Image (cartoon, rainbow, N blue to C red; front, side, top):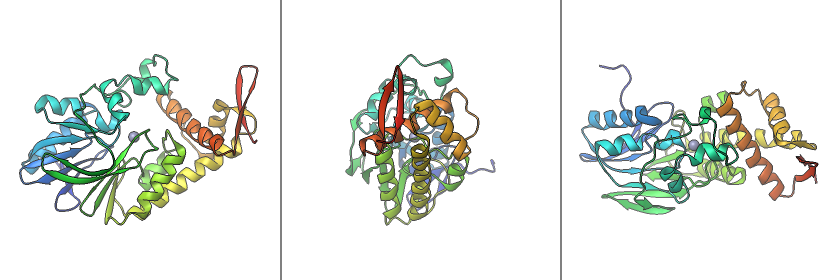
Amino acid sequence: MSAVPASVPVSDRVHLIPGAVNAVLVVDGRRALAIDSGQGKDGGRRVRKAAEALGVELAALLTTHAHADHFGGHAYLLRQRRVPVLAPPVEAELMRAPILEPAYLFHGARPPVELTGAWLQAEACPVDRIVEAGPLEVEGFQVRLHDVSGHALRQLAVEVDDVLVAADAVFGGSVLAKYPVPFGQDAAGQRAAALWVGDHAARVAIPGHGEPAAPAELGAATVAALDRVEGAVLAAADGVDGGEVLARVAAALGVADPDLPRWHLNFTTVHAHLGALRAAGRLVARFEGHRLLWGAP
Ligand SMILES: [Zn+2]
């Protein structure tokens, strides 16, 4: 017997498969709807083992967003049993062509090998149904989907009874302490989504990374982290380029020394904030020669 349970019940129907990335099984009788599948084959294997331990068969795979660490186990699971795969629009395209994630992180160019591991580039998988916010019925399961886009260009939270599977709309406190710059692609959307989760009436929310907690607690911690990043970006942008903004933000917030993947994640996130601040009229971008400089209007 392993000391770590394959899954932990969060409610009658909702079972959390704990790990670096949280996946969830919604159980009904002898069948289960999986929400996300974790990173790579190992993630898929954990979902399979959790289903076996509960004595249930997978009926469908619902994807919150197409970051490789959330859908990387899909291909493995589909080889065991071909079930319908659901995903939000835009994200579905990334699942069909997973090179797009490391490519967008590398400014659209062919990505360096360090960006193509299982963390940032998943195995491709089909998507059978595009889903958006609203009630969802799939294979007899009924859940409610909510738009929490921002961390990813499109992202869904899943409400099941009194549990909100919030995906990466919010992060646990321990995760935020370790990674003070929460990855985001649309900073304004990300903040709105974290505020929305914080106001949700669910008994408990399950973040994509970290421990389940009250929605208000996760929402407040995430909004505070996003506000710290935004403040650091604003303070740094005094006529310097995006790389210098990132270096200053990292120094201000105590971000650990980068490797190639983390640097690109943080660079993209800083640009999500720069873009949002520019759209809000709080920063301007101007050229000096071929340098793109960010500063006050
Ligand atoms: Zn994510």
